[in-house]
Length: 226
Image 1 (cartoon, rainbow, N blue to C red):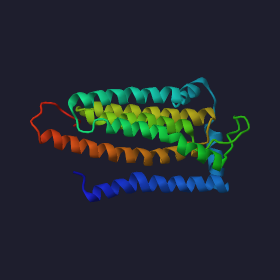
Image 2: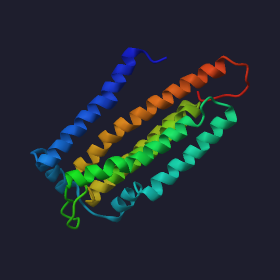
Image 3: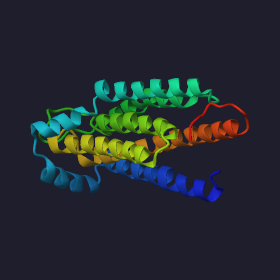
Image 4: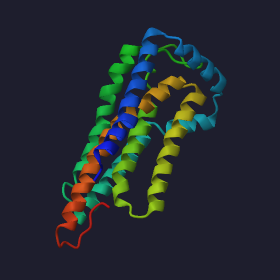
């Protein structure tokens, strides 16, 4: 079981710190603070629109990230039900609800902050925070989190984490390189999704522990998440 100290450290590192950073960035965006000047300079140095950056940014499309998540959720639900795991439906349901909740959080933020785009984008507002980054981080991140408890090999677990990180970083780089978003738009979405995925991790962690206790306490030959 996770000790209170470890849980507190986790909450501070992956919930409190990202939430605080997100609040600071949002404040700077709304108040047009000095941090935006740094953001402008970083963007000017990085923006070089090309085909590769466009392809990378497309990996954050709803049409790409959501089907990947759905496929993983169906697989995990099937494995959980087949293994007779207690509350096998909880992790897929929680991950699905998290993705469904994302636009409910993003749309009001975009309307409230009304941030304009980079110099290569047409006139308009609603670029903060980055929806593509949030979709990629939530979709691929949630898929990884629900899949990890079912992977026994350390190499397989590491591969899933690496692939998830590469996809999210690739989308983030593509968005900034192409000029679709300011760097701070992307960083803010990282922070927001860190909080959301941490909550999902706590839900899945509790499910995994309860499943292991159930499996170890019965004579069933079926196996649950490990």
